[in-house]
Image 1: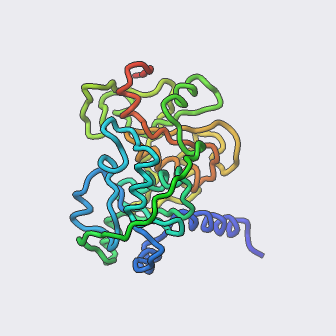
Image 2: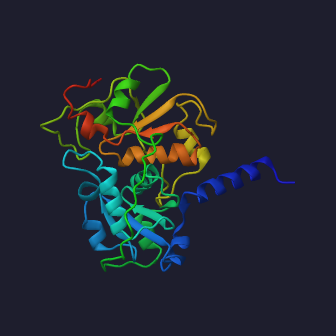
Image 3: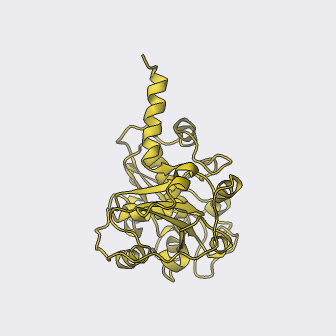
Length: 289
């Protein structure tokens, strides 16, 4: 008879296999026409230096955000998906600087098969797996109209409505310096059009420690310890809703991914406008220690 520990470990492995792929799996499927690999980053430098063969680049600032750092609308995302050769039956695998932001965006639009590569770029290359500098130009697919899933996204009004509500916890996953208002952008720069600080009553929960040294996500047990200060991170449903935010959405999506898919927390949304929007909105409250 299997021990309860063995059953739990198998259950975790099944849950992770639905959203994560290891480097060996992706290497075996690089020629699969039903698999599309996408690198998500804030610029083209890393991708141009080298990328996984067949991968496309989704540049957060050029493709996924507008000039005011808001996530582009559904129509623009659908055009990007079509240009990327992603059909309804395509399995999309994200990697790079912010793979979970790509995962979140496709989940927001209801794409059925989305995965994250469970290792870093450096680990992929260090393992001797194939790399390329050739641009990928897939055949476009038809543009389709998708409805956004409101259970995945929180806008600024939703965050404002959550202020002071005991049934909602706002999670600020930025660095301590950003949370304290010592910097606006992660680089350390301030923004002349914005204010530094955090959303009032937000809980500071940086994403430090979610990954192992090879860039893979830590085990369910380890992640549960990291989020031990939050109720219901044992995999049960119910409890307070969680809304994550960072600067432009990448780190917030990573926390959402870990809570929702690796810890089984149901009620989690991403405020994708994050501090780039909130801190540049003069009509909303900002807190500093």
